[in-house]
Image (tube, rainbow, N blue to C red; front, side, top):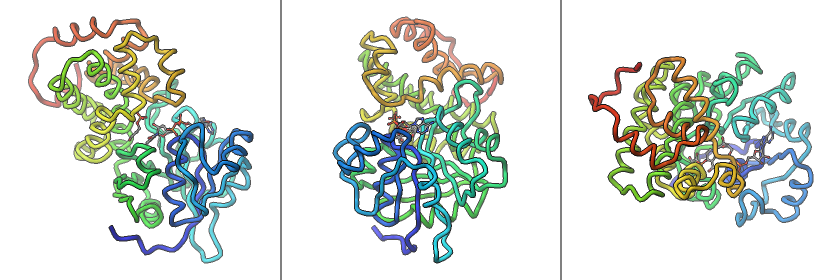
Length: 349
Ligand SMILES: NC(=O)C1=CN([C@@H]2O[C@H](COP(=O)(O)OP(=O)(O)OC[C@H]3O[C@@H](n4cnc5c(N)ncnc54)[C@H](O)[C@@H]3O)[C@@H](O)[C@H]2O)C=CC1
Ligand SMILES: O=C(CO)COP(=O)(O)O
């Protein structure tokens, strides 16, 4: 694999969970990186161990990765360097943390900003780029970096392909120039809606698939769920204005397959836990990480109902998570649904 012949850049990753840590480790092979986290004690422990022993244990930090709990200093690190290269800020919180993080950035000079979170905001039903625009407006270049990428594999330096989605060509170019290279391929897209909807709804489908696998429904059922899940993702995404092609790409089908089938997925593990009859609170506590599909199922159920988009799998997952419907009962209900044409349309019920 060929390395990308770009100059060293200054990158700051804001959020020190599993994914922020993995991305920081990966880009620190080629750039000067600061990993910021909000918990001062946790960051001091990470700085001492040179390992994120809580969220991503077992991946020693490269020398070019610095750890900080000082927000001002971390944001300042990503400003333009002496050679005139703009830095890159990477927001690595879950969706629930994006709005407060962006508020903390308000009024500061922001060179380029990308977010990594996948989901719809729980209370508002907004996608991350809509939250970004609400808080920071249109003047700052921002985009979503998404795609099939388990943190543990990226931290190990295994190959992966991501997509940077932004309406700003300059931002897309900056992210490609900075992140593409080594074992990471970065593709570009201007379809923010399509990329973000794919990344959000695949988490709900991973809960469904994990549950089906946990119940022992078999590989045929798994393939059917993933395929009908893709139809649902596409139906919602195109209704919201996404491009149908995007859902066949890395952030659509690619991430859907990964998350539905890979046991590293936290969302898939939520489904496996539900199939064992565990309470949602127990599953989430045992995970110790965010499972975005949980809040997303609720947000998407409400959004789809408002838009009149038929999303039976999402509704089924939400009914298990929030209405106490038992997995076996849901399976019977899903199988008893009326037959229909295998088309994406109609987008509405
Ligand atoms: N873990 C993975 O393999 C991947 C995760 N993602 C997405 O990245 C996002 C983050 O996931 P993970 O890091 O895996 O979650 P995680 O559960 O491992 O860590 C979440 C981190 O975010 C921090 N956080 C939460 N709210 C915050 C706020 N307001 N300000 C600052 N920090 C805050 C927490 O303290 C914690 O360090 C999610 O949306 C997830 O879907 C995307 C691709 C891969
Ligand atoms: O988004 C991911 C992989 O692309 C991670 O999925 P989980 O959040 O389900 O672990």
